[in-house]
Image 1 (cartoon, helix red, strand yellow):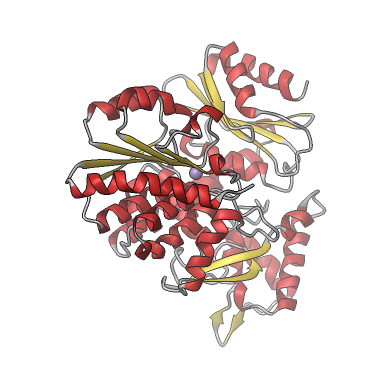
Image 2 (cartoon, helix red, strand yellow; image 1 turned 180 degrees about the vertical axis):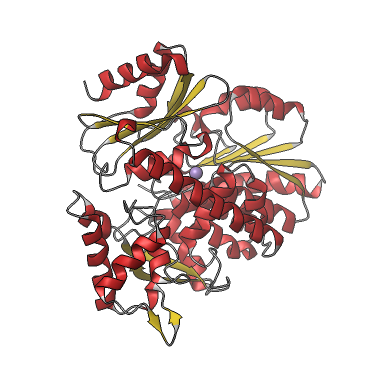
Length: 468
Ligand SMILES: [Mn+2]
């Protein structure tokens, strides 16, 4: 049972501590994760602090481990606020920082840490942190507890929730605490909610470009290929222009939208899962009313993709600047980063799917060998896209890419329609340990790092645990 009142009380417990630091001119460090939810949550907290005149610094880390906690502690800030991470390291943080920290998070937390008055975690108050409350939403409610005038930051809660794929309600809608943040944004007139086809750029791009830009689901032969889409659409007789200008997907009539999905399904062939994949393209969409209609910021999901690209491509600060309101230089940089990210991913997908020797099937397990065609930075998104593609939706996908030196990076995901039960976090850890590597993560998404020379033994260990 969700305990909203208990959650709000916990915020009220941490707020006075933060305000005391702010008024005392103490140095505050906000530490967040580099994915889109992390960038949004860090920006929400940082904005709320700056508006109070705090002496605050925002820092991103790709991962928090005990060593990083030690490094951060040695920098001697007066108060540390961790967001979108740290829930599994509460005792280490307590040991390193004593009472000088606050954790605001949605990752699973041990029973024993739930009553810790320095920790505000969604799970501790009956919210499913994987579906109903992302970190950005947790950060947002902290911001309004600090000052109710921060309700404009609700937009970033919506972006973070979608980027963390928490749109798991009926018709790809947001639920739980995320929905509460969304409703605030709606009441303030910042966002409109409607139902539409969720092709990327549905409001901003010509129809064929929008289809070609869409990689979730991965439309084999169409994603990344404007010309192929255009050829298919021309044959269908769908009116792509009006008065000489390209039409967008959201401007199509309901009948035309139905026709578009049929045409796309036809182009995908009788491939298993194609129909379901396309059905999943229809759902709740969120448009930000004060963003320029011709930028990726207009659509909340695209805003999230833009931020993810900044995190993945090594420029998280560009994404943060956009979150904090920069709509000039930072937005231009972010859009360039997004376009590089997309073409990198499309090239990688093309590289692995066009070469049958790179895809090995073992029952419900699919091994993808990305060495030489997938940049390690893009391995995670590439494997996610494959695990969401019509072809592999009911499989477990485990992929590899060459990493620095003689290392191999491994990334694994469970497809949405997989009907077995696996715990990838555990499997990655055990299989990596068998070959003196390291691995771990969540049940549905996990990774590992091993020596390239041990690739075969590692594959065997994974096959034995999943397919065997
Ligand atoms: Mn998150």
